[in-house]
Length: 98
Image 1 (cartoon, rainbow, N blue to C red):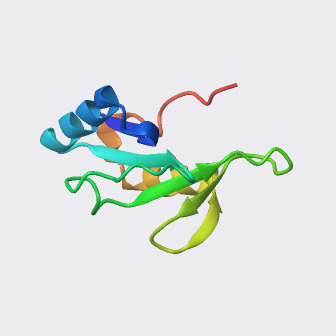
Image 2 (image 1 turned 135 degrees about the vertical axis):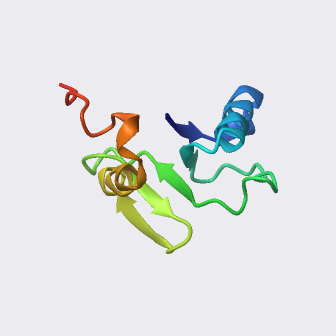
């Protein structure tokens, strides 16, 4: 129903999965490791991209919001993404992870 894709290294299988999500008109969230030098392909370059960086001193994953030029908690980004998902995805009715 949706996809969270890490574009770090532009792996062909990940790019194919993102392409299928585009063809099927499904929702997806794009991430990549901050500092990755790969050029984002033109067909996905207009979608919002979040860059992450592991920071052991900080709790939780912080991601760089390229569009807004600031760090955000991945939890906040994931919540915003979840709010855009249609109810039939079952995202909100799923049991919480423990």
